[in-house]
Image (cartoon, rainbow, N blue to C red; front, side, top):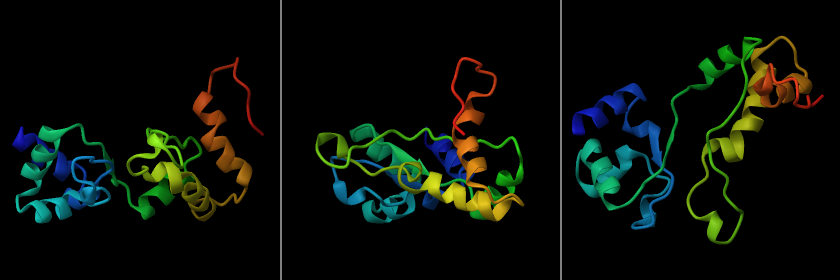
Length: 145
């Protein structure tokens, strides 16, 4: 298992690119990269991941794309914007944990990248990429315009 975690770190750009989203047993680790967690725990990053996962389910936020690449993607007309992040409430029991970037900034940030990365500076194009382009071919769905 350790070698698979190490391979995953390499594939995702290193342990500094994976951030602990929620960890109830030790809240001070939430928002820390796995590189930081490994320093705090005094073990290598793969052992740190195994230690966290041995205690409880531990969701991570993975920062695997840089802004320059995102701008290049936004130039392509078939790019769409989506998220696999889960929703969190603003307060109460469903607000526990850290929101994935998509929940708080990715959609507005992608609108900004769309403006920078394309020749067309229309907010309508950003809305299309976040709504109807996801439903391409679903005739029964409503298109937001």
